[in-house]
Length: 410
Image 1: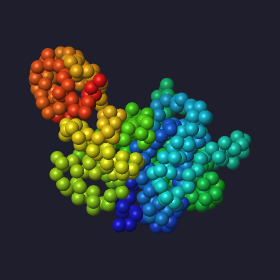
Image 2: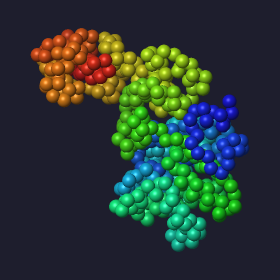
Image 3: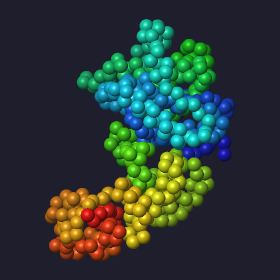
Image 4: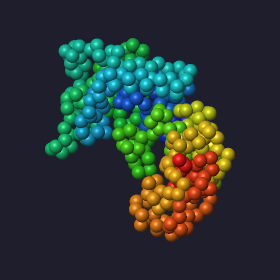
């Protein structure tokens, strides 16, 4: 399958600028993907365009990953309803170093260059920039771009000149990379369309050369929320922010209607392998298991993926008798857990474990047969924990069929 068809089949294509997709991809190009270091770790929303970059590299295109050490000091106004809080420069520098390490781990030995736009943007002279770059942009055209237009809707909304200038700085990045490395393609998520077009226009006006842009759809959850740290549903690549087990469980819990799309974006399985998974019984959740294993292997390695898979089996099978130290540690770090003592009342435990909001609700759950400890039902509202409920110091408290909390005996 050629690259054009593969990218379309996998759902990587949203918009193409400068020509038809086939024409853009038929020559081997140097492309760049820009990422602002607003945090010291990427999250899975950032991972999606990095997977697109991987696809392009695998088909012979040269990659430049740009970390926005300078633009990150301003922040992209796109997708925001109000002015960003500006971060300290030292924090941004620390974030940039952490992100570069993650990129190197993700791409391994693949052929790519990592650059930081602070290396050139921080050296710009303001007057020279306004004369040489600013004159190529009109305010009329910039305020028609969605990322700025959305911030100007209504009498109370506004955008500072600081954020307004972001498009010019990103455009300059494209021009700089084109001049220095002959970069002629920028890729990004669909919310970067306006910035990409600005860069293409600047390159054309300054050099007379034609360059290209390619965006992919934003990845969203089933409610339509963007995968991103500012949306309150972030899944981080750094294990200090999202444990390996929690990372694995996120993918494992993917809804049936989303799993094929996420397999296409976040794994390197072939189209045929994905179709075979989708043809199997959905009750067995083979597609979700494969997605969780592949995505976790990609980010954390095969060993950690297998450990997370084993911990998931233990959590939902209820068999704690043969649990290993590694699996126990992974469960306590990543699964919902609670420290308890022998003799604690189940009514109180349900509240502390956030499985019930009140004693009345806890009583109703128990009386309705909706609470279990290990493989037995809790049927008496006055019942308490005892040491026989535990194996290797752990027990599984269940509410219904899906909600599970790990209890650790202290």
